[in-house]
Length: 196
Ligand SMILES: [Zn+2]
Image (cartoon, rainbow, N blue to C red; front, side, top):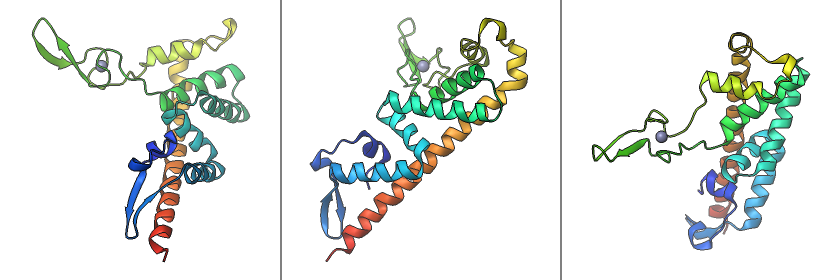
């Protein structure tokens, strides 16, 4: 079965894409791929857009997720600036790769002085840059009008949980879309192997 990364990158080099089945090698066409993505989108729209943003680097899809989340938060009674700030930062955390610029995601950095690889000091050996609470609070405050700026304590007490809820919900949506895409791919393969 092709990976979700391959599916959402919508690239179909035939030789790479042929899948072994009991009937021999069968290749997914671009039409099959677009059809699967369309079906995932109609069942798990937000999750499918997250995969588009994360894998195909589709900024329009990312923006749709932000707007949908912002409107959901506002619907729950949050003011529009805070809703936009929380939506933008949480969607970025889930969709952007945030690869560490120093170690390029390898988690190790070379020290000329010691002629040796060390744990990367920029990302602390994680490979990705994850915003600290302080950076997160500043990022969200950029969306707040001058008279509504949050203090760090306010953010920490009242809104950090909102932020984590958003991140968790986005991961769940993406996971559901990904599961459904795998199920559809599996069905296609079963179909192929069942063809006489
Ligand atoms: Zn690093």
